[in-house]
Length: 246
Image (cartoon, rainbow, N blue to C red):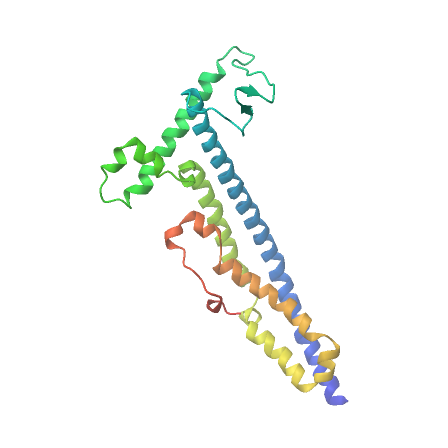
């Protein structure tokens, strides 16, 4: 019994130290994960908004040119010339400014922005730049990525780099010994070998999984990031499960 008491005193001290280190790491990892989720959600929603805005611009151009007979989605829903929303179309604001002209100017501005972004994106892909001078060719090769202007892209990149720097300093909060999943597993495996009945009774493996999850999430933050695809798709490596330490 004296040997068991001595062993469990040492085990308790080791586990307490591990729990303190992992608690510190977990607090920082949670903050980074939440910041990443917010940025990812914002980027996804912005891309979706721009996609629908792109479709609306195309619809309005077709409608003004008399090439659209039926409109079934949008702010006003038309079917065979009947406005089912019965909403009057406001052409001027309270200051008497022509809203239709302002909307047209904004639409042309967005269209030119898409074309410029498309050309910049394709210059590194097509060897024959003559095709890019064709407006029709520019239109059919546009993608939703062309709806993001340089200012928005720069803001995303700055926030992404700030998150990357934050993740990089998290491991410095604790000693390297408490960043190793192998060291943590060794502690539990020795316990199982010495006192298998106590190990099973205490549901130690459940605690081990919870403790390991902190280190797994930290490595996921360090090495796998969906924001990489949006920032620089060409340099984003494809990671396999075997590439991770866990």
